[in-house]
Amino acid sequence: MNIASAPKPVSDLLSPEASQAAATGVLTVDLDAIVANWRKLEKMAVPAECAGVIKANAYGCGLAPVASALAGAGCKTFFVATLDEARAARAALPQAAIYVLDSFFQNCGDAYAKINARPVIGDLNELAEWDVFCRRSGWEGGAGIHIDTGMNRLGLTITEAQGIIPRINAGDHGITLVMSHLACAEALHHPQNARQLATFREIASLFSGVPASLANSSGVFLGAQFQFDLVRPGAALYGINPTPEADNPMQGVVDLKARIVQLRSIDKGETVGYGGTWTARRPTKLAIVSAGYADGYFRAGGSNDGTRGAEVIVAGKRCPIAGRVSMDLIAVDITDLEKNAARRGHMATLIGEGITVDELAHHFGTIGYEVLTSLGPRYTRVYKGGAAAGAVAQPAAAATSPATAAS
Ligand SMILES: *Cc1c(COP(=O)(O)O)cnc(C)c1O
Image (cartoon, rainbow, N blue to C red; front, top):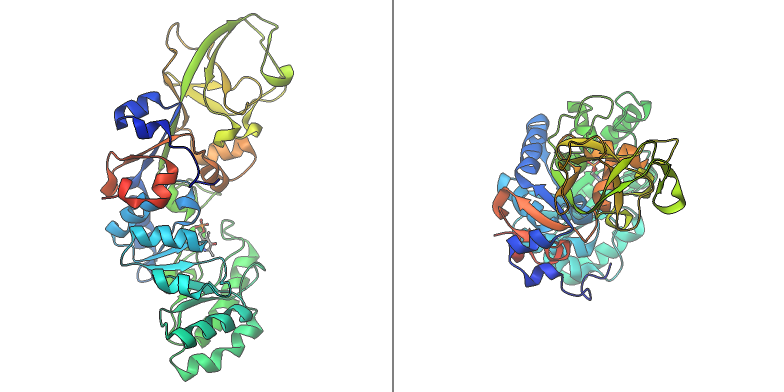
């Protein structure tokens, strides 16, 4: 999405109240819940430091407001994926250490130095290029080193990592973090966890004096031996269950409502939506709700005559989706609601009131991460709590202009 060239949203022309009233969908992000989740993880990780992962627009929740709220709670180290995200993060975080996870590119050194961001270097070529930049410019802002211990995605091999130990021992090496990433942390008893732990422990011990980090959200729950000097939770901050084999220890963060744009009644035997895949088995009342797959409400959440789909809460009750999810709309079977309980213009709840991100992910055939990072740009973002109480921001504004959402 090219944010810069997008036309101004209607909400820019309206007061926050009118903007919400005009919104087809309202996504409320509870910054206090994010902070509570961070504090819980921080407590679990002590004496290790608890960082905050805010890549992908803070998992769809809004980079600037989330960054400000976490910094306000005492979070001092942040991880993003890209340099653009680092720039947005720096605007919201004058003090924090910011690491950029997704590799270093030649000739980008100045861009890192300009915003005092640290690349996470995952390859010897990157390291050489970074060293050239630092030598020529005199920049001493530091960099992380990523070591691959079994994920086979980013990072130096163990042999490559061993090759830079003499440099570490010589001092003045410019490495501020040594890290690796777990491939199977959400499965408590997966044998790969112990293997990666053993490998990382051995190599990290050779990086003497350099802080070490292995655990993502789920890794924090694998126990103290996985926590090293710094933990890097993302998903759990945003309410995704880091322990999918057990109850969710985190608070829900996101509430998503979409407008009922029409009510209609159909006869037994009529079908609903594209393909006519859902047939009314009785005289049926429908609420047509203004969210669809273009908003990140995945098409896989639809239903047909053989399979139930996702559920939506209308007037306090769970109601099933009728038929396929369209680009902008879903149909909800509200036959079982009391007469007149649902009204045109009311909001239906897609996430919240007991419908979790993880539940929706299950219906969509995916994981909570993909649900959150797919939440569409058409929703009006509203922030609750934190430093940005009451702020309303479009996601583009939230990602690029912290002044609109954070104070
Ligand atoms: C995304 C990411 C994290 C955060 O992972 P969660 O599972 O969301 O907690 C941590 N470390 C790295 C390297 C990542 O890419």
